[in-house]
Amino acid sequence: MAVRNLILVLGDQLTPNLSSLAAGDPVRDRVLMAELQDEASYVRHHKKKIAFLFSAMRHFAEELRGLGWTVDYVTLDAPGNQGNFSDQIAHAIAELTPERVIVTQAGEWRVDEVMQGWSARFGLPVDILSDDRFLCTPSAFRQWAAGRKQLRMEYFYRDMRRQTGLLMAGDQPVGGQWNFDADNRKPAAADLFMPRPRTSAPDAITEEVLTLVDARFGNHFGDLMPFWFAVTRVEAEQAFAAFVAQSLPHFGDYQDAMLAGEPFLYHAVIAQYLNCGLLDPLQVCRAVDAAYHAGRVPLNAAEGFIRQIIGWREYVRGIYWLKMPGYEQSNFFAHTRALPDFYWTAQTDMACLKAAVTQTKEQAYAHHIQRLMVTGNFAMLAGIDPHALHEWYLAVYADAYEWVELPNTIGMSQFADGGLLASKPYAASGAYINRMSNYCGSCHYAVKQRTGAQACPFNALYWDFIARHRDKIAGNPRMAQMVRTYDKFGPEEQRKIADSAAAFLASL
Ligand code: FAD
Ligand code: DLZ
Ligand code: SF4
Image 1: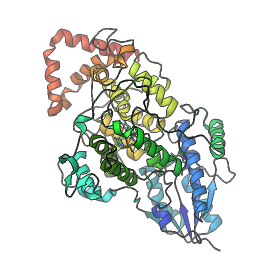
Image 2 (image 1 turned 90 degrees about the vertical axis):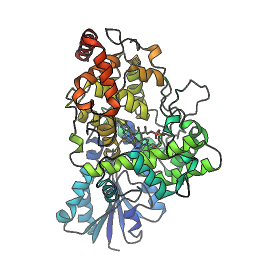
Image 3 (image 1 turned 120 degrees about the horizontal axis):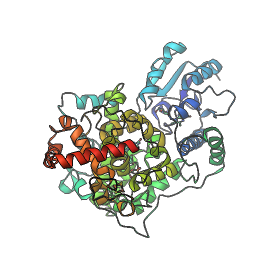
Image 4 (image 1 turned 30 degrees about the vertical axis):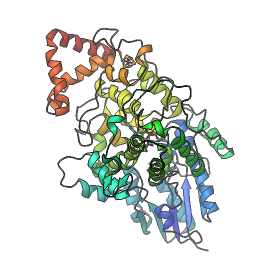
């Protein structure tokens, strides 16, 4: 039977009720999936990330076949592999002569732009359907943002609570408060019984992918082994269920904590599954809502978790589509310093950065506070080019896709958009890291010292950042106090700060 529709499924669209699949018919339509050199290398992704996605894609193709679909799955080493989406689809159109192409909108602007040209290029109708795995469409977000003087996640989040009914009692938030963030700032203590993310053993499909990735991407950053990510929907659901049972009760309390030797703490480690479609964001939030109502998790944990997903995750996506293209070039502080080598090698005497980069290399994972307050904070204080940093985050994390990574990097962590996304720069000295972690105790540097060769570099860099950018930040009510404190230091201390910061930066 002639193929009616050709349905292209991208690597981060591994969801059986995806809009493109829901619009098709397993009997008359053909699904195309492809492992592509261009997608694996437009930034040099972590080896674990590539292996995770290729294996999850191969398992998803099997899942679709089980549902009755005919899937043309093009492996990276297949003879007909064209290396990029456009040529791959041209190749399939020539072979199958479908009447039309159906695809769900891509997550990244870069791919969306290419797709917009397909109908003209192929002389066929190309239906680009909305991605309904998100709660808020780009156009609904645009409407929400229109006319507001300031965009703030908190107000967007409240609307999402009302829209979904999550943790709501009628039109009021459960517990009488929308946000329990203030309760979520406890430092963690080492605990012999600390839960760990559920691991999955590689099956034959994953083993084959691991061999392929080792051969083809052996020179990319990161450790391929041990490989323990879930690669099927069932395994991802098991990993999430284990999180809810074991870690979620403590998720709220220790959300901002960092601990040497504990890369995951009480975090869910599910963003890689959500972002490629193995888990559904609304379903996981409903499960957490149910766990709260069943008395299995406290409200600050349930609310904190749900806020990250229906609040931050949706909000950053809204900002991405509102501001692309162009957002990736934002550079409010005009920072131009190259990314230090230790972001790749972990060769640094700063214990906090060494820990964050080492686990990133080993696990393709670091939790939010490590990304924001260690690698991100350091880069902003040191004046690193935000675009170079963006490419680093996009490459090194298993959960990284531009729609979510870019606003987190440019907006939240670097304040490079001048305050569109965040209300103040997330800049902090060593004191913050010392309060929220136990890294400083074993560090080469002295966290309580502000200047001099032994002083924690975050300290002089912090005050030097305040001094360098005072014109840009003094007007921010949440930063003005820091500018006043700096002014009180007096010229001698200020000179020492500038000298210490300059000496450290010269050593990078
Ligand atoms: P948990 O801490 O257990 O949180 C649960 C879920 O909430 C996450 O799985 C994620 O889906 C969501 N979430 C939490 N915080 C955010 C946030 N700020 N933005 C969007 N979703 C959030 N997240 C990504 O998914 N991909 C990225 O590429 C990415 N890049 C980031 C870059 C920087 C500089 C920063 C500061 C944050 C970035 N984040 C990114 C957000 C966050 O750090 C990760 O979602 C989180 O660390 C993933 O780990 P987890 O699943 O254990 O999350
Ligand atoms: C991230 C990624 C990688 C590493 N490889 C592939 C691939 O081989 N084939 C594919 O369809 N998708 C891959 N992806 C995910 C895409 O980059 C993602 O779909 C686009 O960035 C659009 O969001
Ligand atoms: Fe990081 Fe400074 Fe603490 Fe060392 S002393 S771990 S550099 S914050």
